[in-house]
Amino acid sequence: MLPIPRADLKPNTADFERLPLVKPTGFREYDARWLFPEEINLMGLNAVGLGLAQLFTDRGVKRRIVVGHDFRWYSASVKQALMTGLMAGGMEVHDIGLALSPMAYYAQFALDVEGVAMVTASHNDNGWTGIKMGLDRPLTFGPDDMNALKEIVLGGKYQTRAGGSYNFVPDIGERYMADLSNRPKLKNKLKVVAACGNGTAGAFVPQVLEAIGCEVVRLDCELDHSFPRYNPNPEDMKMLHAIAEAVVKHKADVGLGFDGDSDRCGVVDNEGHEIFADKVGVMLARDLSLIHKNAVFVADVKSTGLFMTDPVLIERGAKTLYWKTGHSYMKRYTNEKKALAGFEKSGHFFFRAPLGRGYDDGLVSAIAVCDMLDRAAGSAGAVSAPGAQARASAGSAPGAQGKKTMADLQRELPKTWQSPTMSPHCGDEVKYGIVDKVIALYKGRAAKGETIAGQKVRELIDVNGIRVVLADGTWGLVRASSNKPELVVVVESPVSEANMRAIFADIDAVLGKFPEVGEYNQKI
Image (cartoon, rainbow, N blue to C red):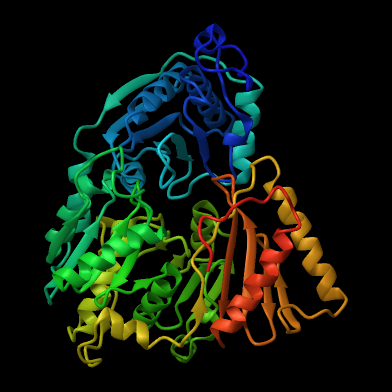
């Protein structure tokens, strides 16, 4: 039996080569992330595979699982070690090879398999690895699942079983692309910049966009796991600026950027302006609410207040529910509430039938943006639904809007002043405690009737960190990152840039009281 994992092993030692290393902080709220090999070694990954098999057994779920890996130099090795543990635990493993996260989720449906374990560090820098896991499609693990897995792995509470098997599936990529492409072509040809940051998306995204009728300008679509230009992260301003330059140079209708495992999509308009994903969500909600009356949407707590206050959405009877940030939280809540779609500020979008299968897929999001632009160009017709299970008619969209560009659609939104997502460093071991102290501090100030940034507090939302909402609708959020040693700070004002900066200054001063909080990745 594999020994109980340890957290104190160092590379280039004898014990590192003969014992499993698993750092406990790698088990995050809804997926796993470790520095490889400093925080997990190959034997540690054996232990995680055995632990996953044990969790399936404990939950009474058939021990069948889809496994794929992203394009990093070490991901295939990580996956091989994970699969060894899975098979030792009696799992029937379906290896789909190099893949996008949404491709692995699709494979659960296409192969009729219960589980998924996608080896990916997503948008994290090189050196990171991770696993996105699930045992109840289309959902991925939440905190209860992760805590159960953590207890099994770190306690060595797993056992080997007979019956494990390995099946290589060579054609899931082709089946996935065909599934998304099996739909009517766009009526108005769009020129689209597809930016993949030299990540996994470059092997699949351009082909699908071309198949639906786009003229594709490829930007950093050659796979190169050194990521020579920038990390593939559509929230990163360096990537967004590169997309913007390409859009202007090629006179494209839109720029679309995909992260390392392509479950997120970032958007740049035809004039080269970056559009934060939550604003894209409002634009898509407007478009879809014209077709689906009284539609229900979900937005994460980092997202713009426009989901609640936009007069167009109000007029069309759309309702938006705010929920916890995190792809697993949002995925689960969007499906529980039977919402048409969920929108997360990070760019994870969740489209349910007839538009999708309920999981986050950057390509499905990109197609939704293209369909919105196609309708905005004056084409009447049904909403096209990617995926063979989503072929039901979605109704018809009036084409009487007249021809509008992506920039036009953005300008139609009520004006707000909004920051990018800012992430000051804060260690995994202390970040949640810091946030708890920040929550207590703001609740205490509000209880005393103190003003914040010169205003009274209208509301404190603590479903995920603390969202401080002021009298004029200006708000600021502080929460702990779920997958990196960082805090997350976002601010927005519907009134002025000065008010946005004022609430950021207040939050920044509060965080400055804690020496554990370090430098920001970027500031307004």
